[in-house]
Image (tube, rainbow, N blue to C red):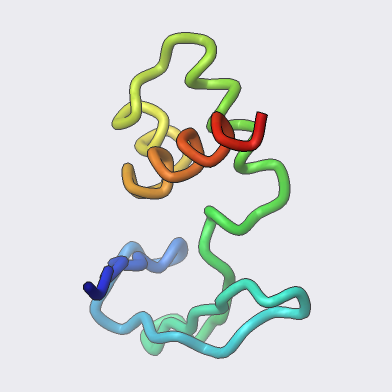
Length: 88
């Protein structure tokens, strides 16, 4: 089963020209926008993002609301919450 994530450029809000652009120093994926000619990393790999997801869930935010506010996909939010419960 293949999971496809549509990454939207944070600068021009386009999904079509965005391509993978290797990995960062610690292994997170980097992306390149052909229109903007900028490379960046996707929001879900920023430091502290997992803590924000868990904090919003504990304060009563739903999965869709959390994803919309943080700019993440709902699958990432669900996976993070599931893994945080298993680690405790």
